Image (cartoon, rainbow, N blue to C red; front, side, top):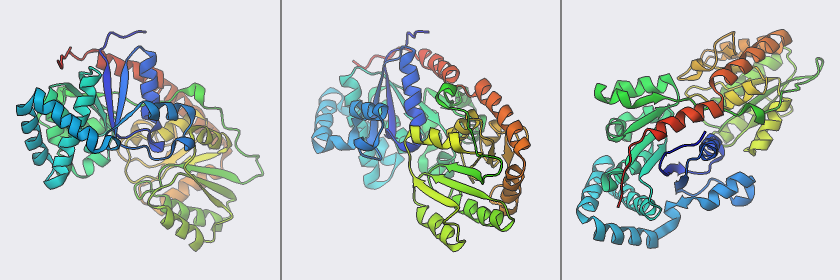
Length: 407
C-alpha cells in the first residue's frame, strides 16, 4: 500500500521517550506505507543517546528539538514571522496569553513560532500532535499563525484530569481531525465539546506487531510463579498497591516473584513498601529497560499485572497478551475495550486490595485459567489491536487531509 498524502509534521512534548515507544512504532509503520514524516519535540529525549537502541537513536538524531534550538532559534523564528506575517504573529501571541496565563503563554507562543518556522523550512503544511497537553497548545498556536491543517491523537486520561486548565474544548474546536485511541476517549471529548465538533472524533486504536513478541515459556510447575508489571512508577499505575497485594499472597502461602520494570516519581514509595513488608527477596525493581529487555521479561513471565487507577488503553497490556501472558488489570477508562473480564483477562476493582489479591491468587493457583485466558487474549489482540492494520486506518485518515499551502 502506498499513500498520496502530503508530508506530515509530528509534534510530541518529549520524543523519543521510553514510555512512548508506540509513537516511534507508529511513525515507522506510516513511513513504511509511504508517508513522509518529520518529527519535532518540545523537550529533549528522556535519556542519553547511548542508552537508546539503534532505532531510537536514529529518531533522536533526526528530530527537531525546540528548546534545544535556544535563543538563536527563537530570534530567527521571530524575525522570519515578523517579516512574513507580522499581524498573524501578534494575534498568535495574544492567543497564547489567552490559552495560558503569564510567561507560560508567551513561552508557548514562542515555541509555536519556532515550530512553524521549522515546518515552513521543510514545507510541511500538516501538523499532527500526540496527546492533548502542552504540545497540543503549541499546535493550536502554530495553526493560528500558519493556517496549517491540525490533528491530534488523544489518549487520556491525563488530558481529562484538568479540562479547563488544558483548554481542551478550545483545542477540539481548533482541530481539523482528532484521532481517539479508544471509544472511552471519544466519549470524554464529546462530553466537553460542541456537537458540531463530534464529527472530527475518529476512533483509531493503537496496536502491536505480533511478530515482535515471543511466546512466554513461563516457569516450571513447581517453581515460583513469575509476576511482571511494566510501566512508569506513578500513583496512576498504583504499583504500591501491588506490593501490598504481594505481601498478602506471601502470607497466604503463594510462592512467587514480582519483577517491576520502569522508573518514575513513585519509586521511593514502592521501595519503601517493599522494605516495609520484607519482600526484597520476592520483588525486583529493574528500572527502565529497552524494548528488547521488556520483550525478554515477557518471555519469562507467568502473569502480567497492571493495577491502574487511570489509563488510556495501555500498549503494554497488548504486548503481554501478544506474548501469551495472562493479564490482571482494572476496568478503568479504555481498558475494558481490550480486556473482557474472565474471557481475555481478569479485572480487579480499582484501588481494592482484596479484589486484586483474589484475582492474582486465582491465576497463581490455576495454570488452566492462565492458559485459557492467554489463548483468548492473543486472539483478541491479533484481531483488533494489530499495529499494521490500525496504522493503515490512521494512514487513511491522514490521506483524507485537504491540501494546504503554507507559502
